[in-house]
Image (tube, rainbow over all chains, first blue to last red; front, side, top):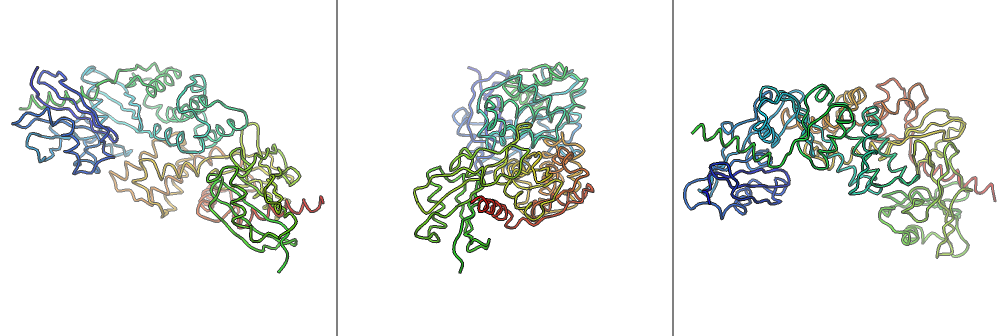
Length: 302
Length: 302
Protein backbone atom coordinates (compact mmCIF):
# COMPACT_ATOMS: atom_id res chain seq x y z
CA UNK A 1 0.00 0.00 0.00
CA UNK A 2 1.29 3.45 -0.96
CA UNK A 3 2.08 6.12 1.57
CA UNK A 4 -0.24 8.90 2.58
CA UNK A 5 0.83 12.10 0.81
CA UNK A 6 -2.01 14.54 1.46
CA UNK A 7 -5.63 14.78 2.54
CA UNK A 8 -8.52 16.22 0.52
CA UNK A 9 -11.46 17.76 2.41
CA UNK A 10 -14.84 18.96 1.12
CA UNK A 11 -16.42 20.80 4.06
CA UNK A 12 -19.94 22.00 3.33
CA UNK A 13 -22.82 23.38 5.36
CA UNK A 14 -24.22 19.98 6.25
CA UNK A 15 -21.49 17.48 5.40
CA UNK A 16 -17.79 16.71 5.79
CA UNK A 17 -16.10 14.47 3.21
CA UNK A 18 -12.45 13.44 3.37
CA UNK A 19 -10.16 11.41 1.16
CA UNK A 20 -6.66 10.25 2.09
CA UNK A 21 -4.46 10.37 -1.01
CA UNK A 22 -1.11 9.05 -2.17
CA UNK A 23 1.35 11.09 -4.16
CA UNK A 24 0.23 9.60 -7.48
CA UNK A 25 -3.34 10.83 -6.99
CA UNK A 26 -4.82 7.52 -5.85
CA UNK A 27 -7.49 7.46 -3.17
CA UNK A 28 -6.31 5.45 -0.14
CA UNK A 29 -9.51 5.80 1.87
CA UNK A 30 -12.73 7.82 2.07
CA UNK A 31 -14.80 8.91 5.04
CA UNK A 32 -17.78 11.20 5.64
CA UNK A 33 -19.59 12.66 8.60
CA UNK A 34 -22.51 14.98 9.18
CA UNK A 35 -20.30 17.51 10.98
CA UNK A 36 -20.82 20.30 8.47
CA UNK A 37 -20.43 24.01 9.20
CA UNK A 38 -23.93 24.25 10.64
CA UNK A 39 -22.99 21.75 13.39
CA UNK A 40 -19.66 23.30 14.39
CA UNK A 41 -17.99 26.28 16.01
CA UNK A 42 -14.46 27.27 14.99
CA UNK A 43 -12.99 25.35 17.96
CA UNK A 44 -14.57 22.04 16.89
CA UNK A 45 -13.22 21.73 13.36
CA UNK A 46 -9.88 20.16 14.19
CA UNK A 47 -11.55 17.49 16.35
CA UNK A 48 -14.18 16.73 13.70
CA UNK A 49 -11.40 16.23 11.16
CA UNK A 50 -9.26 14.07 13.46
CA UNK A 51 -12.30 11.87 14.18
CA UNK A 52 -12.21 10.85 10.52
CA UNK A 53 -8.49 10.79 9.67
CA UNK A 54 -6.62 10.70 12.99
CA UNK A 55 -5.76 7.01 12.65
CA UNK A 56 -4.39 7.46 9.12
CA UNK A 57 -1.87 10.14 10.10
CA UNK A 58 1.82 9.18 10.36
CA UNK A 59 3.54 9.70 13.71
CA UNK A 60 5.84 12.39 12.37
CA UNK A 61 5.86 15.14 9.84
CA UNK A 62 2.93 17.35 8.90
CA UNK A 63 0.58 16.14 6.14
CA UNK A 64 -0.95 18.77 3.84
CA UNK A 65 -4.72 18.99 4.26
CA UNK A 66 -6.53 20.86 1.46
CA UNK A 67 -10.07 22.02 2.29
CA UNK A 68 -12.74 23.71 0.21
CA UNK A 69 -16.25 24.90 1.02
CA UNK A 70 -17.99 26.50 3.97
CA UNK A 71 -15.10 25.77 6.36
CA UNK A 72 -13.71 29.02 4.90
CA UNK A 73 -16.80 31.13 5.61
CA UNK A 74 -17.09 33.74 8.33
CA UNK A 75 -18.99 31.24 10.49
CA UNK A 76 -16.53 28.45 9.59
CA UNK A 77 -13.11 27.27 10.78
CA UNK A 78 -11.26 30.37 9.63
CA UNK A 79 -12.40 32.94 7.08
CA UNK A 80 -10.64 32.45 3.74
CA UNK A 81 -10.86 35.67 1.71
CA UNK A 82 -12.62 35.36 -1.65
CA UNK A 83 -10.91 35.62 -5.03
CA UNK A 84 -12.76 38.12 -7.24
CA UNK A 85 -14.33 37.18 -10.58
CA UNK A 86 -13.28 37.30 -13.32
CA UNK A 87 -10.56 34.92 -12.16
CA UNK A 88 -9.31 31.35 -12.45
CA UNK A 89 -10.47 28.82 -9.89
CA UNK A 90 -8.29 29.77 -6.91
CA UNK A 91 -5.15 27.67 -6.38
CA UNK A 92 -3.39 26.76 -3.18
CA UNK A 93 -1.22 29.87 -3.51
CA UNK A 94 -4.26 31.90 -2.45
CA UNK A 95 -5.27 29.53 0.35
CA UNK A 96 -5.56 30.47 4.00
CA UNK A 97 -3.36 28.47 6.36
CA UNK A 98 -5.04 27.39 9.57
CA UNK A 99 -2.90 26.75 12.69
CA UNK A 100 -3.69 23.45 14.42
CA UNK A 101 -2.91 21.95 17.80
CA UNK A 102 -2.01 18.60 16.27
CA UNK A 103 1.46 19.02 14.69
CA UNK A 104 0.76 16.25 12.16
CA UNK A 105 -1.66 18.54 10.29
CA UNK A 106 -0.81 21.34 7.83
CA UNK A 107 -4.23 22.76 6.93
CA UNK A 108 -5.08 25.07 4.01
CA UNK A 109 -8.55 26.39 3.12
CA UNK A 110 -9.07 27.35 -0.51
CA UNK A 111 -10.81 30.68 -1.17
CA UNK A 112 -14.29 30.94 -2.61
CA UNK A 113 -15.06 33.39 -5.43
CA UNK A 114 -17.00 36.64 -5.10
CA UNK A 115 -18.45 38.96 -7.68
CA UNK A 116 -18.94 42.60 -6.76
CA UNK A 117 -21.81 43.50 -9.08
CA UNK A 118 -24.29 41.95 -9.10
CA UNK A 119 -23.15 40.87 -5.64
CA UNK A 120 -22.67 37.11 -5.52
CA UNK A 121 -20.56 34.50 -3.76
CA UNK A 122 -19.59 30.84 -4.05
CA UNK A 123 -17.68 28.52 -1.71
CA UNK A 124 -17.01 24.99 -2.87
CA UNK A 125 -18.38 25.34 -6.40
CA UNK A 126 -15.09 26.96 -7.55
CA UNK A 127 -13.40 23.65 -6.69
CA UNK A 128 -16.03 21.65 -8.61
CA UNK A 129 -15.39 23.99 -11.54
CA UNK A 130 -11.64 23.35 -11.25
CA UNK A 131 -12.40 19.62 -11.24
CA UNK A 132 -14.51 19.96 -14.38
CA UNK A 133 -11.84 22.06 -16.12
CA UNK A 134 -9.18 19.48 -15.25
CA UNK A 135 -11.08 17.18 -17.65
CA UNK A 136 -12.12 19.81 -20.21
CA UNK A 137 -9.52 22.61 -20.03
CA UNK A 138 -10.69 24.19 -23.30
CA UNK A 139 -14.34 24.49 -22.26
CA UNK A 140 -15.93 27.75 -23.36
CA UNK A 141 -19.52 28.00 -22.25
CA UNK A 142 -21.77 27.84 -19.23
CA UNK A 143 -21.77 25.46 -16.29
CA UNK A 144 -25.02 24.88 -14.43
CA UNK A 145 -24.38 23.57 -10.90
CA UNK A 146 -27.73 22.48 -9.43
CA UNK A 147 -28.15 22.44 -5.68
CA UNK A 148 -29.70 24.34 -2.79
CA UNK A 149 -28.28 27.48 -4.37
CA UNK A 150 -28.13 26.78 -8.08
CA UNK A 151 -25.29 28.49 -9.91
CA UNK A 152 -24.86 29.52 -13.56
CA UNK A 153 -21.21 30.12 -14.35
CA UNK A 154 -19.83 31.59 -17.57
CA UNK A 155 -16.40 30.09 -18.27
CA UNK A 156 -13.96 31.20 -20.92
CA UNK A 157 -10.17 30.82 -21.24
CA UNK A 158 -10.12 28.79 -17.96
CA UNK A 159 -11.62 31.75 -16.08
CA UNK A 160 -14.86 32.22 -14.22
CA UNK A 161 -16.03 35.25 -16.19
CA UNK A 162 -19.27 35.87 -14.26
CA UNK A 163 -21.83 33.89 -12.31
CA UNK A 164 -25.29 34.13 -10.86
CA UNK A 165 -26.86 32.23 -7.97
CA UNK A 166 -30.56 31.37 -7.65
CA UNK A 167 -31.89 30.05 -4.36
CA UNK A 168 -34.36 27.85 -6.25
CA UNK A 169 -33.47 24.61 -4.44
CA UNK A 170 -33.90 26.21 -1.04
CA UNK A 171 -37.26 27.73 -2.08
CA UNK A 172 -38.43 24.31 -3.27
CA UNK A 173 -37.48 22.69 0.04
CA UNK A 174 -39.06 25.43 2.18
CA UNK A 175 -42.29 25.75 0.21
CA UNK A 176 -42.72 22.01 -0.31
CA UNK A 177 -41.83 21.08 3.24
CA UNK A 178 -43.09 23.91 5.42
CA UNK A 179 -45.75 26.02 3.71
CA UNK A 180 -49.46 25.20 3.46
CA UNK A 181 -48.54 23.24 0.30
CA UNK A 182 -46.94 20.50 2.40
CA UNK A 183 -50.44 19.02 2.81
CA UNK A 184 -50.80 18.68 -0.97
CA UNK A 185 -47.30 17.55 -2.01
CA UNK A 186 -45.70 14.14 -2.15
CA UNK A 187 -42.23 13.82 -0.64
CA UNK A 188 -41.30 11.50 -3.50
CA UNK A 189 -42.79 10.85 -6.93
CA UNK A 190 -42.56 12.77 -10.15
CA UNK A 191 -44.71 13.52 -13.20
CA UNK A 192 -42.44 14.78 -15.95
CA UNK A 193 -45.25 16.07 -18.20
CA UNK A 194 -46.63 18.12 -15.33
CA UNK A 195 -43.09 19.33 -14.63
CA UNK A 196 -42.45 20.46 -18.20
CA UNK A 197 -45.74 22.28 -18.57
CA UNK A 198 -45.11 24.05 -15.26
CA UNK A 199 -41.63 25.05 -16.51
CA UNK A 200 -43.29 26.60 -19.52
CA UNK A 201 -45.89 28.33 -17.32
CA UNK A 202 -43.18 29.60 -14.94
CA UNK A 203 -41.20 30.96 -17.89
CA UNK A 204 -44.19 32.79 -19.40
CA UNK A 205 -45.77 34.09 -16.20
CA UNK A 206 -43.08 34.33 -13.53
CA UNK A 207 -44.94 37.06 -11.63
CA UNK A 208 -47.84 34.68 -10.90
CA UNK A 209 -45.67 32.44 -8.73
CA UNK A 210 -47.37 33.24 -5.42
CA UNK A 211 -50.79 32.67 -6.95
CA UNK A 212 -49.92 29.62 -9.05
CA UNK A 213 -48.50 27.97 -5.93
CA UNK A 214 -51.62 28.64 -3.89
CA UNK A 215 -53.60 27.19 -6.81
CA UNK A 216 -51.82 23.86 -6.20
CA UNK A 217 -53.37 23.82 -2.73
CA UNK A 218 -56.79 24.83 -4.09
CA UNK A 219 -56.67 22.25 -6.92
CA UNK A 220 -55.75 19.62 -4.40
CA UNK A 221 -58.76 20.58 -2.22
CA UNK A 222 -61.26 21.11 -5.03
CA UNK A 223 -60.20 18.88 -7.89
CA UNK A 224 -58.12 16.14 -6.25
CA UNK A 225 -54.78 17.17 -7.79
CA UNK A 226 -52.32 14.29 -7.26
CA UNK A 227 -49.50 14.83 -4.77
CA UNK A 228 -46.78 13.74 -7.23
CA UNK A 229 -48.13 16.08 -9.92
CA UNK A 230 -48.22 18.92 -7.37
CA UNK A 231 -44.58 18.26 -6.42
CA UNK A 232 -43.47 18.26 -10.07
CA UNK A 233 -45.43 21.47 -10.73
CA UNK A 234 -43.87 23.29 -7.77
CA UNK A 235 -40.43 22.34 -9.07
CA UNK A 236 -41.37 23.30 -12.64
CA UNK A 237 -42.74 26.73 -11.68
CA UNK A 238 -39.58 27.58 -9.76
CA UNK A 239 -37.15 26.27 -12.38
CA UNK A 240 -39.13 27.88 -15.22
CA UNK A 241 -38.96 31.22 -13.48
CA UNK A 242 -35.21 30.77 -13.04
CA UNK A 243 -34.69 29.81 -16.69
CA UNK A 244 -36.30 33.07 -17.80
CA UNK A 245 -33.96 35.17 -15.67
CA UNK A 246 -30.93 33.00 -16.54
CA UNK A 247 -31.63 33.08 -20.29
CA UNK A 248 -28.57 35.28 -21.01
CA UNK A 249 -26.51 32.44 -19.54
CA UNK A 250 -27.89 29.46 -21.43
CA UNK A 251 -29.25 30.84 -24.70
CA UNK A 252 -26.98 29.98 -27.62
CA UNK A 253 -24.16 28.76 -25.38
CA UNK A 254 -22.54 25.40 -24.77
CA UNK A 255 -24.23 24.39 -21.52
CA UNK A 256 -23.05 21.61 -19.22
CA UNK A 257 -25.15 20.56 -16.23
CA UNK A 258 -23.04 19.12 -13.44
CA UNK A 259 -24.56 15.97 -11.99
CA UNK A 260 -27.06 13.30 -12.90
CA UNK A 261 -29.22 13.08 -9.78
CA UNK A 262 -32.88 14.14 -9.56
CA UNK A 263 -32.36 17.88 -9.43
CA UNK A 264 -29.69 17.89 -12.14
CA UNK A 265 -31.86 15.85 -14.49
CA UNK A 266 -34.76 18.23 -13.86
CA UNK A 267 -32.57 21.08 -15.11
CA UNK A 268 -31.32 19.04 -18.05
CA UNK A 269 -34.86 18.10 -19.02
CA UNK A 270 -36.13 21.68 -18.68
CA UNK A 271 -33.26 23.10 -20.73
CA UNK A 272 -33.71 20.37 -23.31
CA UNK A 273 -37.35 21.38 -23.76
CA UNK A 274 -36.13 24.92 -24.52
CA UNK A 275 -33.83 23.61 -27.22
CA UNK A 276 -30.68 24.36 -25.26
CA UNK A 277 -29.18 20.86 -25.76
CA UNK A 278 -27.33 20.75 -22.44
CA UNK A 279 -24.79 18.03 -21.65
CA UNK A 280 -25.11 16.14 -18.35
CA UNK A 281 -21.65 15.82 -16.82
CA UNK A 282 -20.90 13.26 -14.13
CA UNK A 283 -20.31 15.05 -10.84
CA UNK A 284 -18.98 12.05 -8.97
CA UNK A 285 -15.76 12.98 -7.19
CA UNK A 286 -15.57 16.24 -9.14
CA UNK A 287 -14.70 18.13 -5.95
CA UNK A 288 -11.88 15.65 -5.35
CA UNK A 289 -10.61 16.28 -8.88
CA UNK A 290 -10.59 20.02 -8.13
CA UNK A 291 -8.73 19.52 -4.86
CA UNK A 292 -6.25 17.26 -6.69
CA UNK A 293 -5.62 19.99 -9.25
CA UNK A 294 -4.89 22.40 -6.38
CA UNK A 295 -2.51 19.86 -4.85
CA UNK A 296 -0.71 19.43 -8.18
CA UNK A 297 -0.10 23.19 -8.37
CA UNK A 298 1.13 23.02 -4.76
CA UNK A 299 3.68 20.35 -5.62
CA UNK A 300 4.89 22.26 -8.69
CA UNK A 301 5.50 25.30 -6.51
CA UNK A 302 7.64 23.35 -4.01
CA UNK B 1 -76.77 44.38 31.64
CA UNK B 2 -78.52 43.00 28.56
CA UNK B 3 -79.12 39.34 27.97
CA UNK B 4 -76.93 37.11 25.88
CA UNK B 5 -78.60 36.55 22.50
CA UNK B 6 -75.92 34.88 20.39
CA UNK B 7 -72.20 34.20 20.16
CA UNK B 8 -69.88 35.25 17.32
CA UNK B 9 -66.80 33.10 16.63
CA UNK B 10 -63.83 33.74 14.33
CA UNK B 11 -61.91 30.46 14.23
CA UNK B 12 -58.72 30.66 12.22
CA UNK B 13 -55.66 28.48 11.74
CA UNK B 14 -53.83 29.88 14.73
CA UNK B 15 -56.42 31.79 16.75
CA UNK B 16 -59.89 31.59 18.25
CA UNK B 17 -61.81 34.82 18.91
CA UNK B 18 -65.27 34.96 20.47
CA UNK B 19 -67.72 37.73 21.26
CA UNK B 20 -70.86 37.33 23.35
CA UNK B 21 -73.58 39.55 21.89
CA UNK B 22 -76.96 40.94 22.91
CA UNK B 23 -79.91 41.10 20.57
CA UNK B 24 -79.28 44.76 19.67
CA UNK B 25 -75.81 43.98 18.33
CA UNK B 26 -73.85 45.14 21.37
CA UNK B 27 -70.74 43.27 22.46
CA UNK B 28 -71.17 41.93 26.00
CA UNK B 29 -67.69 40.38 26.27
CA UNK B 30 -64.70 39.34 24.20
CA UNK B 31 -62.24 36.50 24.62
CA UNK B 32 -59.42 34.96 22.61
CA UNK B 33 -57.25 31.90 22.78
CA UNK B 34 -54.48 30.32 20.71
CA UNK B 35 -56.56 27.19 20.11
CA UNK B 36 -56.78 27.59 16.35
CA UNK B 37 -57.36 24.79 13.85
CA UNK B 38 -53.70 23.83 13.85
CA UNK B 39 -53.89 23.00 17.58
CA UNK B 40 -57.12 20.98 17.51
CA UNK B 41 -58.72 17.78 16.34
CA UNK B 42 -62.46 17.68 15.62
CA UNK B 43 -63.18 16.30 19.08
CA UNK B 44 -61.52 19.24 20.87
CA UNK B 45 -63.45 22.13 19.35
CA UNK B 46 -66.42 22.09 21.68
CA UNK B 47 -64.16 22.07 24.75
CA UNK B 48 -61.98 24.88 23.39
CA UNK B 49 -65.13 26.96 22.84
CA UNK B 50 -66.59 26.19 26.27
CA UNK B 51 -63.28 27.18 27.89
CA UNK B 52 -63.95 30.72 26.66
CA UNK B 53 -67.74 31.09 26.91
CA UNK B 54 -68.98 28.30 29.22
CA UNK B 55 -69.51 30.67 32.13
CA UNK B 56 -71.55 33.11 30.02
CA UNK B 57 -74.07 30.51 28.86
CA UNK B 58 -77.54 30.54 30.44
CA UNK B 59 -78.68 27.38 32.24
CA UNK B 60 -81.42 26.65 29.74
CA UNK B 61 -82.17 27.06 26.09
CA UNK B 62 -79.65 26.77 23.25
CA UNK B 63 -77.75 29.93 22.22
CA UNK B 64 -76.91 30.37 18.52
CA UNK B 65 -73.17 30.26 17.91
CA UNK B 66 -72.08 31.58 14.48
CA UNK B 67 -68.57 30.56 13.39
CA UNK B 68 -66.50 31.48 10.37
CA UNK B 69 -63.02 30.46 9.24
CA UNK B 70 -60.95 27.31 9.33
CA UNK B 71 -63.25 25.55 11.78
CA UNK B 72 -65.18 24.68 8.60
CA UNK B 73 -62.22 23.15 6.76
CA UNK B 74 -61.68 19.46 6.14
CA UNK B 75 -59.20 19.38 9.04
CA UNK B 76 -61.53 21.52 11.20
CA UNK B 77 -64.54 20.93 13.44
CA UNK B 78 -66.83 19.85 10.64
CA UNK B 79 -66.43 20.50 6.92
CA UNK B 80 -68.71 23.31 5.74
CA UNK B 81 -69.16 23.07 1.95
CA UNK B 82 -68.01 26.12 -0.01
CA UNK B 83 -70.32 28.51 -1.83
CA UNK B 84 -69.14 28.99 -5.43
CA UNK B 85 -68.12 32.37 -6.85
CA UNK B 86 -69.66 34.41 -8.31
CA UNK B 87 -71.89 34.62 -5.25
CA UNK B 88 -72.84 36.84 -2.33
CA UNK B 89 -71.00 36.37 0.95
CA UNK B 90 -72.70 33.22 2.28
CA UNK B 91 -75.47 33.75 4.81
CA UNK B 92 -76.53 31.55 7.68
CA UNK B 93 -78.99 29.78 5.39
CA UNK B 94 -76.01 28.00 3.81
CA UNK B 95 -74.30 27.26 7.12
CA UNK B 96 -73.45 23.79 8.39
CA UNK B 97 -74.98 22.88 11.74
CA UNK B 98 -72.66 21.08 14.15
CA UNK B 99 -74.12 18.75 16.81
CA UNK B 100 -72.73 19.38 20.30
CA UNK B 101 -72.74 17.48 23.57
CA UNK B 102 -73.59 20.60 25.55
CA UNK B 103 -77.31 21.29 24.92
CA UNK B 104 -76.83 25.02 25.59
CA UNK B 105 -75.02 25.40 22.24
CA UNK B 106 -76.58 25.65 18.76
CA UNK B 107 -73.52 25.85 16.49
CA UNK B 108 -73.41 26.93 12.82
CA UNK B 109 -70.34 27.18 10.63
CA UNK B 110 -70.54 29.58 7.70
CA UNK B 111 -69.26 28.31 4.34
CA UNK B 112 -66.15 29.64 2.69
CA UNK B 113 -66.12 30.53 -1.02
CA UNK B 114 -64.47 28.54 -3.79
CA UNK B 115 -63.73 29.36 -7.38
CA UNK B 116 -63.41 26.53 -9.86
CA UNK B 117 -61.11 28.14 -12.40
CA UNK B 118 -58.54 29.29 -11.63
CA UNK B 119 -58.93 27.04 -8.59
CA UNK B 120 -59.02 29.11 -5.42
CA UNK B 121 -60.54 29.05 -1.94
CA UNK B 122 -61.21 31.34 1.00
CA UNK B 123 -62.44 30.66 4.53
CA UNK B 124 -62.99 33.60 6.82
CA UNK B 125 -62.30 36.35 4.29
CA UNK B 126 -65.88 36.03 2.92
CA UNK B 127 -67.08 37.14 6.38
CA UNK B 128 -64.66 40.09 6.41
CA UNK B 129 -66.03 41.00 2.99
CA UNK B 130 -69.60 40.81 4.34
CA UNK B 131 -68.50 43.06 7.22
CA UNK B 132 -67.03 45.57 4.78
CA UNK B 133 -70.15 45.48 2.58
CA UNK B 134 -72.36 46.06 5.64
CA UNK B 135 -70.75 49.52 5.79
CA UNK B 136 -70.44 50.12 2.02
CA UNK B 137 -73.21 48.10 0.34
CA UNK B 138 -72.81 49.89 -3.00
CA UNK B 139 -69.06 49.21 -3.31
CA UNK B 140 -68.01 48.33 -6.84
CA UNK B 141 -64.31 47.63 -7.05
CA UNK B 142 -61.55 45.51 -5.61
CA UNK B 143 -60.79 44.55 -2.04
CA UNK B 144 -57.22 43.69 -1.10
CA UNK B 145 -57.09 41.58 2.07
CA UNK B 146 -53.44 41.35 3.19
CA UNK B 147 -52.34 38.41 5.28
CA UNK B 148 -50.48 35.12 5.11
CA UNK B 149 -52.44 34.40 1.96
CA UNK B 150 -53.19 37.77 0.44
CA UNK B 151 -56.48 37.96 -1.48
CA UNK B 152 -57.65 40.26 -4.30
CA UNK B 153 -61.43 40.20 -4.57
CA UNK B 154 -63.49 41.79 -7.32
CA UNK B 155 -66.83 42.92 -5.91
CA UNK B 156 -69.82 44.16 -7.85
CA UNK B 157 -73.55 44.28 -7.06
CA UNK B 158 -72.82 42.85 -3.56
CA UNK B 159 -71.29 39.74 -5.13
CA UNK B 160 -67.81 38.27 -5.02
CA UNK B 161 -67.30 38.15 -8.79
CA UNK B 162 -63.85 36.55 -8.77
CA UNK B 163 -60.79 36.40 -6.55
CA UNK B 164 -57.17 35.41 -6.52
CA UNK B 165 -54.93 34.34 -3.65
CA UNK B 166 -51.16 34.95 -3.44
CA UNK B 167 -49.14 33.21 -0.75
CA UNK B 168 -46.86 36.25 -0.52
CA UNK B 169 -47.11 36.64 3.26
CA UNK B 170 -46.22 33.01 3.85
CA UNK B 171 -43.27 33.26 1.43
CA UNK B 172 -42.03 36.34 3.29
CA UNK B 173 -42.20 34.56 6.64
CA UNK B 174 -40.52 31.37 5.37
CA UNK B 175 -37.74 33.06 3.41
CA UNK B 176 -37.07 35.72 6.03
CA UNK B 177 -37.22 33.34 8.97
CA UNK B 178 -35.84 30.05 7.71
CA UNK B 179 -33.74 30.41 4.57
CA UNK B 180 -30.08 31.44 4.41
CA UNK B 181 -31.38 35.06 4.35
CA UNK B 182 -32.29 34.83 8.03
CA UNK B 183 -28.66 35.71 8.83
CA UNK B 184 -28.97 38.96 6.86
CA UNK B 185 -32.48 40.14 7.80
CA UNK B 186 -33.75 42.12 10.76
CA UNK B 187 -36.84 40.77 12.51
CA UNK B 188 -38.05 44.35 12.89
CA UNK B 189 -37.16 47.63 11.19
CA UNK B 190 -38.14 49.05 7.85
CA UNK B 191 -36.67 51.24 5.13
CA UNK B 192 -39.51 52.51 2.97
CA UNK B 193 -37.28 53.81 0.15
CA UNK B 194 -35.60 50.41 -0.10
CA UNK B 195 -39.06 48.81 -0.04
CA UNK B 196 -40.44 50.95 -2.86
CA UNK B 197 -37.44 50.48 -5.12
CA UNK B 198 -37.62 46.72 -4.54
CA UNK B 199 -41.35 46.81 -5.43
CA UNK B 200 -40.42 48.47 -8.69
CA UNK B 201 -37.63 45.92 -9.29
CA UNK B 202 -39.97 43.02 -8.46
CA UNK B 203 -42.58 44.38 -10.87
CA UNK B 204 -40.11 44.80 -13.74
CA UNK B 205 -38.10 41.61 -13.25
CA UNK B 206 -40.26 39.07 -11.43
CA UNK B 207 -38.34 36.11 -12.87
CA UNK B 208 -35.16 37.21 -11.07
CA UNK B 209 -36.67 36.59 -7.65
CA UNK B 210 -34.47 33.60 -6.72
CA UNK B 211 -31.36 35.49 -7.76
CA UNK B 212 -32.31 38.90 -6.34
CA UNK B 213 -32.98 37.24 -3.00
CA UNK B 214 -29.61 35.50 -2.93
CA UNK B 215 -28.06 38.88 -3.77
CA UNK B 216 -29.40 40.19 -0.45
CA UNK B 217 -27.23 37.57 1.28
CA UNK B 218 -24.24 38.38 -0.93
CA UNK B 219 -24.62 42.15 -0.45
CA UNK B 220 -24.82 41.61 3.27
CA UNK B 221 -21.58 39.56 3.20
CA UNK B 222 -19.68 41.74 0.73
CA UNK B 223 -21.04 45.25 1.07
CA UNK B 224 -22.53 45.37 4.58
CA UNK B 225 -26.17 45.68 3.48
CA UNK B 226 -28.21 46.73 6.53
CA UNK B 227 -30.57 44.17 8.03
CA UNK B 228 -33.58 46.51 7.99
CA UNK B 229 -32.96 47.42 4.33
CA UNK B 230 -32.68 43.72 3.50
CA UNK B 231 -35.99 43.01 5.23
CA UNK B 232 -37.75 45.81 3.34
CA UNK B 233 -36.25 44.63 0.05
CA UNK B 234 -37.41 41.04 0.55
CA UNK B 235 -40.93 42.33 1.20
CA UNK B 236 -40.76 44.71 -1.77
CA UNK B 237 -39.55 42.05 -4.22
CA UNK B 238 -42.38 39.72 -3.23
CA UNK B 239 -45.11 42.37 -3.24
CA UNK B 240 -43.83 43.88 -6.51
CA UNK B 241 -44.00 40.48 -8.16
CA UNK B 242 -47.55 40.05 -6.88
CA UNK B 243 -48.63 43.51 -8.09
CA UNK B 244 -47.55 42.62 -11.62
CA UNK B 245 -49.65 39.47 -11.67
CA UNK B 246 -52.57 41.15 -9.88
CA UNK B 247 -52.58 44.17 -12.21
CA UNK B 248 -55.92 43.17 -13.83
CA UNK B 249 -57.40 43.48 -10.34
CA UNK B 250 -56.11 46.88 -9.28
CA UNK B 251 -55.52 48.82 -12.48
CA UNK B 252 -58.18 51.47 -13.05
CA UNK B 253 -60.41 50.14 -10.28
CA UNK B 254 -61.59 51.46 -6.94
CA UNK B 255 -59.23 49.60 -4.58
CA UNK B 256 -59.71 49.29 -0.83
CA UNK B 257 -57.01 47.69 1.33
CA UNK B 258 -58.43 46.10 4.44
CA UNK B 259 -56.40 46.94 7.52
CA UNK B 260 -53.86 49.48 8.70
CA UNK B 261 -51.17 47.31 10.26
CA UNK B 262 -47.64 46.84 8.87
CA UNK B 263 -48.48 44.48 6.02
CA UNK B 264 -51.59 46.43 4.97
CA UNK B 265 -49.70 49.71 4.88
CA UNK B 266 -46.96 48.07 2.80
CA UNK B 267 -49.59 47.18 0.18
CA UNK B 268 -51.16 50.63 0.38
CA UNK B 269 -47.79 52.30 -0.05
CA UNK B 270 -46.81 50.02 -2.97
CA UNK B 271 -50.14 50.58 -4.75
CA UNK B 272 -49.90 54.29 -4.11
CA UNK B 273 -46.51 54.39 -5.83
CA UNK B 274 -48.18 52.80 -8.88
CA UNK B 275 -50.79 55.54 -8.95
CA UNK B 276 -53.61 53.23 -7.85
CA UNK B 277 -54.84 55.55 -5.06
CA UNK B 278 -56.04 52.79 -2.74
CA UNK B 279 -58.12 53.52 0.35
CA UNK B 280 -57.03 52.01 3.68
CA UNK B 281 -60.11 50.65 5.42
CA UNK B 282 -60.13 49.92 9.14
CA UNK B 283 -60.26 46.17 9.69
CA UNK B 284 -60.96 46.30 13.39
CA UNK B 285 -63.85 44.02 14.26
CA UNK B 286 -64.70 43.65 10.56
CA UNK B 287 -65.16 39.91 11.00
CA UNK B 288 -67.59 40.62 13.84
CA UNK B 289 -69.52 42.97 11.56
CA UNK B 290 -69.77 40.16 9.00
CA UNK B 291 -70.94 37.65 11.57
CA UNK B 292 -73.50 40.22 12.81
CA UNK B 293 -74.83 40.60 9.27
CA UNK B 294 -75.25 36.83 9.10
CA UNK B 295 -77.06 36.87 12.44
CA UNK B 296 -79.40 39.62 11.21
CA UNK B 297 -80.37 37.50 8.21
CA UNK B 298 -80.91 34.59 10.61
CA UNK B 299 -83.33 36.62 12.73
CA UNK B 300 -85.24 37.84 9.68
CA UNK B 301 -85.73 34.24 8.58
CA UNK B 302 -87.17 33.18 11.96
